[in-house]
Image (cartoon, rainbow, N blue to C red; front, top):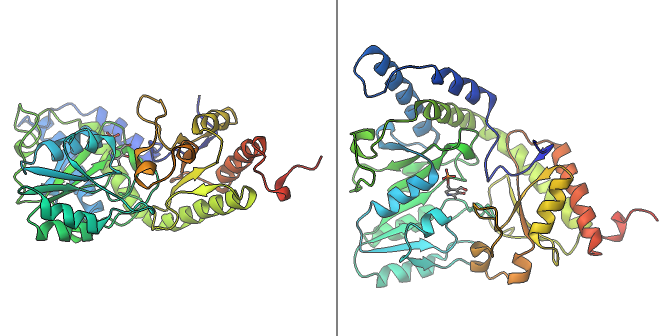
Length: 376
Ligand code: PLP
């Protein structure tokens, strides 16, 4: 069953119809892209078109792009595939970075959710040898946009390599691989209206990446395995559409801002985490004090409104958010945080459906401002 109101784009974006059509068409291709006959060459050509489309979205050279099975694999390839002696990762990274680098030193963030550049500089100074720094471009829970270019400049001055997880940022803001000055960047198709199970790692020419998945020589020897042609084709089309529709993000930001303004007006105790920083236009991390996030997510779902608990993990269980904890948010308030994320299909009606359902929850806790209390 599909929720009438889908506001969980940071978990996965609905597949764009043009992407579904392109995938369906590519599914009928016959050849293995490594085969030299005409069928193989036709499949290969489709992959190369997609490579151009995805590279164009983030200002990279197509030859720098390695297709993977998603953002998780790309993050693992970057973290495990780089030899530096020490790893420094921001404390708010996605689990696919944190768990790929279990011994990494965590770089703290400020209460506004921004990587602490001064702490990074100090950690770089005390690093025992060449380091790999990983800082995401935008956080998946709060949407806070990180000072990646500044972090990369600091890291490079200290002789470190820099990886950036741009999974949530791509398609929601302008992303330029060269301008950010990073050495590696992770992307995921399903966050921008493409298929699940497809992503990419962009690798600058000089990076000594060690292959993690061995086998055939696909992806110029950097990631073995027959390519998922149909998904890659879908990724390409999604990237092109997302790039073309970046201008629509201003409209999405207006919807998100309206949601937050009306939420705060009706529930003065509500908290918007990361609101003091530049954020993705589509993301709101909203705390309703005293009301556990799981309760909110379930009650909203009963009303046909789909959002995430701020701290949901892939098993669906809710556990304390390491992102909000790193920002210094108390455990009880953090446990009340939900993530509302908008996207290409979101309308004013969706925002209103969310607010009307969420206000009912606030009323249960007596948090609704008198102006919004239904007349007795
Ligand atoms: N990085 C970030 C910031 C994410 O939000 C996610 C998914 O939620 C991932 C990586 C993992 O990407 P994928 O689902 O393609 O494995």
